[in-house]
Amino acid sequence: METILGIDLGTTNSEVSVIRDHDIVVIEKEGRRLLPSVVGIDPAGNLLVGHPAKNQAILYPERTVKSIKRKMGEDVHIRLGDKEYTPPEISAMILRTLRAYAEESLGQKVTKAVITVPAFFNDTQREATRLAGELAGLDVVRIINEPTAASLVYNTSSDERETLLVYDLGGGTFDVSVVRVEEGVLEVLASHGDTHLGGDDFDQLLFDYVCDTFKKQHKVDLRDTPVAVSRVLQAVEEAKKRLSTEPFTQIKEEFIAEKDGASLHLDMELSRQQYEEQILPLLEKTLTCLNDALNDAHLHPNDIDKVIMVGGASRTPLVHQLLESRLGNKLHGEIDPDLCVTMGAAVQGGLISGAEIGRVLIDITPHTLGTSVFDDWVGSPYVFSPIIKRNTPIPCSRSNVYGTMHDNQQAVEVAVFQGESNDVRHNVMIGNFRLDGLAKVPRGNQIVCQFDLDINGILHVTATEKSTGLAGNITVENVLTEHKPQADESFKEHLKSFFAEREMDSDEPVIDVETGSETTDSKNFAIQAGLTDGWDKRYEKEVALIYRVADFISKTTGDDRTEIETRTKELINAINRNDSDQAGSIASQLEDLLYYLEDSV
Ligand code: AMP
Image (tube, rainbow, N blue to C red; front, side, top):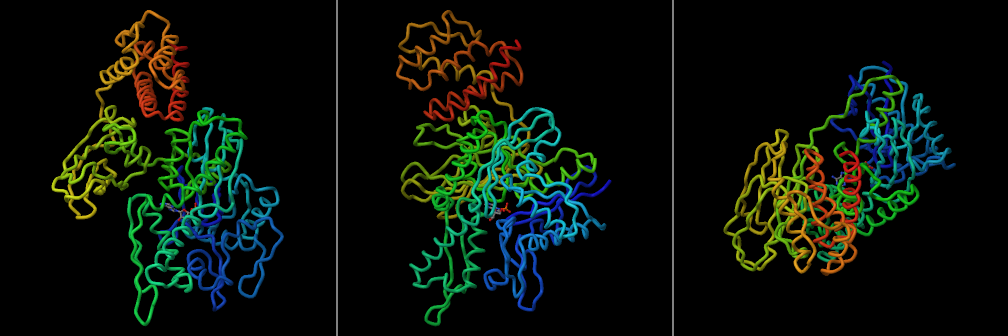
C-alpha cells in the first residue's frame, strides 16, 4: 500500500502522520511530535527549522521567521539573514523537515502528501500551499480543510448524519466551523474565525502581568532585556499550561535581572481564577465567531451533535466551561487537540490509497468524577463539581480549589461522586473521607482537591489545606466502570417533589408517578401550574414537558428510560437554578427524545 503523509502545516506548530497497520501513527522526532513552524538562519549561516529556530527567535528576530502561514498567498518576500524568500519557500523548509522525519521513522522514501489548510483559505492561499509541497519534493494529492480533517478522525466509520462544530483554538489563530457529515461525505457549512487570536495572546497577557508586577516590586522592567523577555515568555507559557489542570501555579526564574549589583529572582504565584479573568474578553470574542458560524449555517445550538475541540489552547478549562454553557454537554477533546488535524489528514491519505482504517482507540474515562459542594448562589449543598470530565484521556490528573464555609471551620467532608448530573443526589457516591484539624481561620480557607486517575481505573483523591499542607486522601478502585445508582426510586422521588412543590396550593389532580396516570390534560395543567404558583413564566414549556415525561415514563425501559430520566433530572435542576439557557437546551433534547420514543411505542 502506498504511503501518503498527512500534514498539518500550522501557524504555530506543524505535525505529520501516516496510516500503519490500520492505525494512525503520528511521527515523532526525539520524543516530540510538534515541530514549531519557525525557520531561522543562525549566525554561522546554518538553516534552522523547528525548536532551534524558535529558541533563537528573541535573540535574532531578523534571522527568524514565525507564522509564515499568515503570509501564504501574498506576493511578498521575506528576509532571512541576507537572502529573501517567498512564503511557499519558507513553508517548504518546514515541509521538507517533516518529510525527512517521516522517512527516517518509516525507513522508506515518501513522495505523496495530504496537506490541511484553514476552511477560509482562498484559491491563491491553497495554491501557495500546494506549491510549498512541491518545493519540498511532495506530490500533494489533496488539500483538505482543517475542520474536515478533525471531523474525519472523530467520525471515521459513521454512516449517520451528524452535525459537528469544530472549535479550533491554536497558538495564533482561531477558527470555528460547522461540518455536516452524511453518508461519508463531509461538508463545511460555515466557518468563522480570527486570524490573530490564540494561545500566544494569552501568553502575552500573562507576560505583561508578570512584568508589571515585577516592575512594581523591584523597579526593574524585564521587557528591557531580550534574554529576560525570552525566559519570562517561556515561563508564562508553561504556567498557562499547568493552569489547565491545577488551580494555582508558581512562576519561578532565578537570576532574571540585576539591580545595584544584586541579583533579582522572579517568584510569583498565579491562580487559575486570576488567569481566567484576564483571558475572558478574548474567549468571548470566540463565542461571537461561534454565533456567526451557527447563524450562517442557519442552525441552533441544539442542532449540533458533537463539539470537537482542536488546537492546543482548546485545553483551557474556561473554554470548556463557556462552550458547555452555550452548547450543552457534548464536548469531545479525547483525541489530542494538537494532533487531531494531522491525524485526519493521514485518514484522508489512507482513504485515497485504499487503506483500511480502524477506529481511533483511546483510553478515556467514560464518566465524570467530581465532588460535592455547597453552592451559595444556588443555595444547595448538593451541587456537583466535576473534576475529571467524562471523555478525558487517561491517565490524568486534575485539581480544583474550594473554600470553607464557616469561620474557624475545623474539618471538611470530601465526597467523591461519579455521574453526569449537576445534582450529586443523582450521581453515585464512590468514596468519602474527612479532613480534620484545619487551621482556625476565617471562612474561605482554601482546600485543594486533586484527582489522579490511572490507566487501570484507580482513582487517588487528595485534599490539601493550601496554607498548611495538611492533607488527607482516599483511593477508589474500578472508577471506569459505571457504579449503578439507585435510579428508579430516586427518579420517582425527584418527580414527586417537583410536582409537589407546584401543586401545593392547587386543586388540580396529582399525577401518579407510579403509573403515569392522571385525570386532566397534563399540558394544560402544567401550563396553569407554571402560571399560577409563581414559577417564572419562561419555564411554561419546560414544565409542560416534565408533565409529558411523567405521563410517558412508565412505557419506557432500559437505556431509553435512563436517558429520559437523566435529561429530566437535569432539566429540573436547571429550572431550580433558574438557568434558562440550560433549561431550554436540555428541554429541546428531551423533546426530541420523547418525539422519537412516543412514536415508537
Ligand atoms: P497549536 O497552534 O494548536 O499547536 O496550539 C498551540 C497553543 O496551544 C500554544 O499557545 C500553547 O501554549 C497552547 N497550549 C498547549 N497546551 C496547552 C494546555 N495544556 N493548556 C492551555 N494551552 C495550551
